[in-house]
Amino acid sequence: MESYKSLFSPDLLKGKVAFITGGSRGGMLKEIARGYLLHGAKGVVLMSRNAEKNGEVAKDLSQYGQCLSEPGDVRKPEDCKRAVANTIKALGQIDILVNGAAGNFLASASALSINGFRTVQEIDTLGTFNVSQAVYNGYMKEHGGVIINISATLHWSGSALQVHSAAAKAAIDSMTKTLAVEWGPNKVRVVGIIPGGIEGTEGFARLSDANAMNDKEKANAAFKDGTQSNKATMEQLGKKTVALQRWGSIYDIANTALYLASPIASYVTGTNVLVDGGAVLLYPNMLFTDPKFVDMWSLGKL
Ligand code: COA
Image (cartoon, rainbow, N blue to C red; front, side):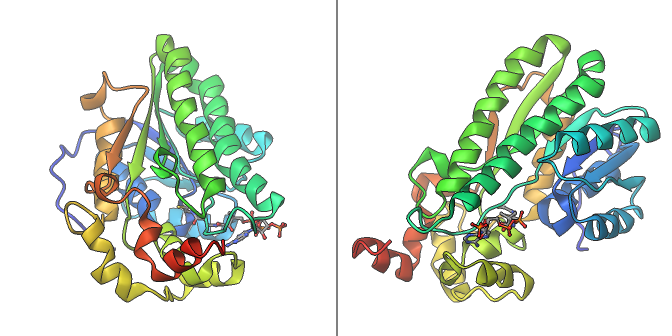
């Protein structure tokens, strides 16, 4: 894994334990875990439902510090409670929770199956609630801590082809505020990170391929084989929709997650940090960069 030169103190998270959901596909969540370990964390626990991949990522991260795998499905409250209890047993504490588990793909609202819509609500919204509640009741209620929800800008505008994810992220932002208020007196901060287009992530591959629209197999292939059909468009045109004229890196997100988890952000709660290079200011609906989408939308074919 490529490394970056951190500007934070190596002791930033000394003695802390982090619990991260959804990191088994690598990308930004794995880099957040790595960043925490490189900055003094006593341990990181990864929870996602693919036991094999979750274990592989945890094993790889063990070169940077103690990293444990707790396979489980964030949609199932019993899995969340078990993983939290096992973490407390093994490491004694959970100071930082990163709710990263999420599902997303391009699907027009008219074609999306009810189960497709429900699945994303369950992973994103219910999953964020289930894990947050388990961590709060299992540890943070007594000891305080910080909960970081990974969100999006989808619901700031009308992001076509993502009615499922936009609705889920709107609910998550609402939870960020509500839980910050309810759990603030117990010294729990609840914050969010909103990543823009982050190169090398599964989300970026899936969401930048309009040919994968309404097609589960193609959406999966877009990540596995790196086969986005419009790579050239994303490279040449896509970057122009970002104020800083570049896509984000996993380090941009990991650095934000370090800041938010650390005492530097001790007075920050109930809000999101937007890390998108200014993209939302220029182009709220990134799909308009894709000729295929513009064609289908303007002809009323969606
Ligand atoms: N387009 C349309 N519908 C899709 C779809 C796609 N690309 N992917 C899944 N669905 C639908 C399925 O068809 C199914 O509905 P159905 O029973 O009516 O056919 C429903 O969603 C559940 O899919 P399934 O594959 O059975 O569930 P799963 O739990 O194994 O995986 C997701 C669902 C959403 C997690 C997975 O498809 C996904 O998107 N993973 C990517 C994770 C990711 O990219 N995270 C970063 C987000 S930015």
